Image (cartoon, rainbow, N blue to C red; front, top):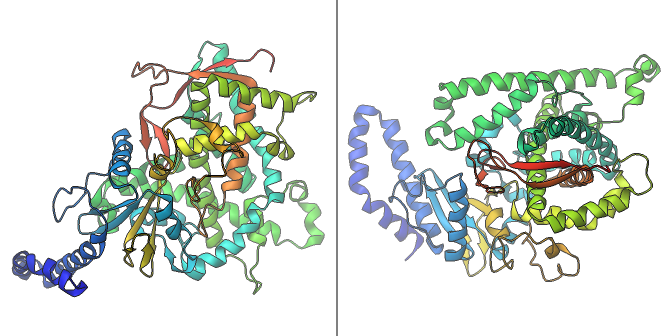
Length: 532
């Protein structure tokens, strides 16, 4: 059947419905009726074009899989079922509004993630709700605008800059551990990890991004509370299809709360950028008036304020604010999730935990001060293997989505049509039984260099891959190694119990939101090591 015939057959089967809509439209307005008909024709077009992909059972021809994609433990188990049944991919649609291809196998993931950035777009389903917060930042922008920003931001993640951040990672981790020592001393050994680790990563990022000591781990911060609320509200908005339209959302109570929290975050970032711009703009001969500028090493805002493109142009204050906001959002939650799940996996595997601890103790032998240096990061091979395996088993981000400005060819003569949303399932790829042996088991030896030779390209994609991969992955991995190493040096970890649920030790229901969390929190038992 030709493409035109296929679409016409879909449309003609709905002629009666369209006629009814047009009649109703006389009362509701011809514009609404025309928009509805256009939406249905578009739906028919994508339904036909995506017929080369298997489609799981849908609720109806119009609503499709609306309501079937769950942000729960059951939702992740559903992905496991889809991988088992469809192996590499399947089509999915959410009402007549969003048409997706879900991809699980590295062979299908590779051509999409490796596609040139010039034809790769960020879709509105996942990223549109972030736009009020992050503006046209690197995460959301496309085309030449994205390419220019990527070039200007790359120096902020150079090794020479990351070296300066390691000291801040140590400081923030030490503050968190001091809190833990105090709790353990009073008999509170069962501790929820996400609350503590998220505040620690926010504290760390505020120092790295703005050279700002928020003290947020010990006292409440209006800015930090606003960031946490914005993250929660974005999750809530994604799950309510009617809230996807701005003209509805901004009238709701959630929309009003979002705007209030947003004003706090934007005001803070704007003031920091403006003050730093003024400081940097001071003539060199007056720098003695700013001794703090001489002593302080350059942070994220400094680097991007000074960065220039080939035409000598830098980012505007508004663009810098957008990138700083993105750095805070993308950097704190994902890293906190990765740290918590790594500690959880090591708590459940005492032998691997002890091997990591011994590696760190050997590294620290003979030192007066237990502080991880930049040069130490390459001397923690087994700890790094455990971190990578945890990133596979409990990847903070469960999926990334893309759209393309042209049709995309996939294996077995399948094609993703231009404009359809490609949902690359990081979870599905990382738990694919044809790619990973015993995929639900924690086995860091998978990442032993001796065992990694046969690993399929794009089988391990916690930071995505290709031109639009995560620019901050080296930053995240450095912080992960510092926090995990220092924690194992000072505490022994065992599975804890959620006091409200009274669950068995280590029993956890995963909760995929903006990042992977745990229902009711992730609880661990801490034992302070005497010889730390």
